[in-house]
Structures are given as structure tokens and as C-alpha cells.
Image (cartoon, rainbow, N blue to C red; front, top):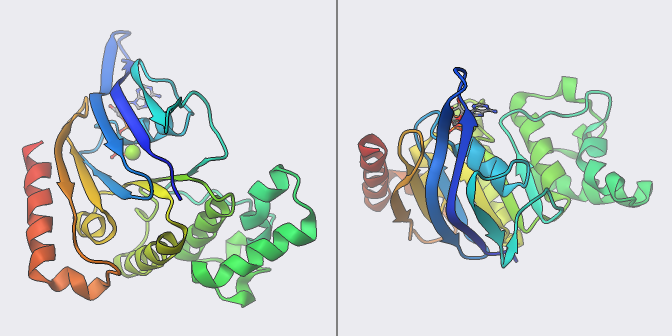
Length: 254
Ligand SMILES: Nc1ncnc2c1ncn2[C@@H]1O[C@H](COP(=O)(O)OP(=O)(O)OP(=O)(O)O)[C@@H](O)[C@H]1O
Ligand SMILES: [Mg+2]
């Protein structure tokens, strides 16, 4: 089961190129219940990736803070997994060696970690014939599936996804979203996912947070109470269309 997340009066600023302050994000506050799937939407540059980095413990807040259950996030931890738009695989390692990397870093014996990685292939939608393939032989979608495997193998309680499918074509993206939903329904981590795609957010999320322009603040907090399991066909329905319209209006108002 995932962990609960609290963001309390969080803001982040950077130094602007002219040396002044550049407020990038906040102040924002929100709570996420364990095992829920939250999507973040907002204009480019409103601080979404900044928020993801703070939640991953990779960057400090300027004010306020974020908490996993009651514990303040101050540094990266094994409980938190993060995945970006770029798969960033090691080109000299095979698919299963890439997936197994986090287990190697914590000293799991070779045969055991490769077996664990191999068992994940069907869930990731990767055929067994690709186990020994190298990243250079994979399509963009397959590389992202491997990157997803590499983050899931460490069994994170909080999964942070920053536009993980942003570079993929619409069809591949839909397929991977469905597979991600399937895996999440059995693992049930807490997920925070940044996307620019409104339909993707409605399909995946329990809740959508919409951010304003920089410095990003939360302008809408929209629950998505569509029944699960969800299928692509659900996106043709009236209720889905109504929610997508509501999200679109919030994005435009921000
Ligand atoms: N390391 C940095 N130093 C200075 N400014 C930064 C830094 N990182 C981000 N910024 C600025 O902070 C603001 C928010 O950036 P961020 O990458 O978090 O936005 P985003 O919402 O993820 O945008 P996008 O949707 O384009 O990915 C932007 O104005 C950006 O230029
Ligand atoms: Mg970003």
C-alpha cells in the first residue's frame, strides 16, 4: 500500500538570470490519501517538475515542506520512485539488467535480481524475447516500459511520474497508460503523475490538480469518480467528456 503525502505551504523560488528572485511554485498545500492516483496539469513553466523534484527529495523547498506520512522529505529515499520523459537506460546493459539495477544497488544477488526483473516483463507488456535486448534495439515506448520496470522493481510506496509518456505517439501512450493502470491496481502505490494530456489524466486519475501559470498555485482540485477498471472505450462516454470539459475549463482559467 502507498503512503499518504502532505504538502504544506510549499513554495520554491529560483534565482532569475538578472540575479533577482524567480518565484516558480506556490504557495501550495494539499494532502493525498494512500494508494490514490493524482494527476497534475498546468501550463508550461508553472513549477510541476519543480514540485516533483521536491517530493523526490532532490531539491529543497524555499518555504514550507512536504511530508510522507509524518516524515518530512529532505532527501531521496527508497520509498519514493521517480520516472521522467526520458528513459535514461544504460545502453551497455540488457533490458533485464536495466530493470534489475535498483536491486543491484542494494546488493541483491545476481541470479535473484535478474529473475525478479524477468518476472516483471509480462506485466510491463514486454515479450520475453526482449529480455536480453539492448536499449538501442528498443522503440521509445518499449524503452519507457523498461524505465517503468526499473522504478517499480524497488517497490516504491510513492511513485512520481513526470510526463513519462510525453514523447510517445498517441496510440503507444494509450497502451502504456492502460498497462500502468493495470499494474497500479495490483500494487496500489500512491502515484503523482504530471501530464499535459487531459484525457490521459481523466482516464488514469482519482483526482486532478490543476495549476495556474508560474508561480503555480492550485486553481482546481477535481475528483474523478469514474468506476474502475477503466478502459479506453470509457473515454467516449458522456461522464468522461463532462469531466474532461471541466478540467479543460480549469486549465484555461489558470
Ligand atoms: N534550476 C533552475 N534554475 C532557475 N530556474 C529554474 C530552474 N528550474 C526551473 N526553473 C524555472 O522555474 C519555473 C518552473 O519550471 P518547471 O520545470 O518546474 O516547470 P514545469 O511546470 O515542469 O514546466 P513544463 O510543463 O514545461 O515541463 C520555470 O520558469 C523555469 O524556467
Ligand atoms: Mg516539467
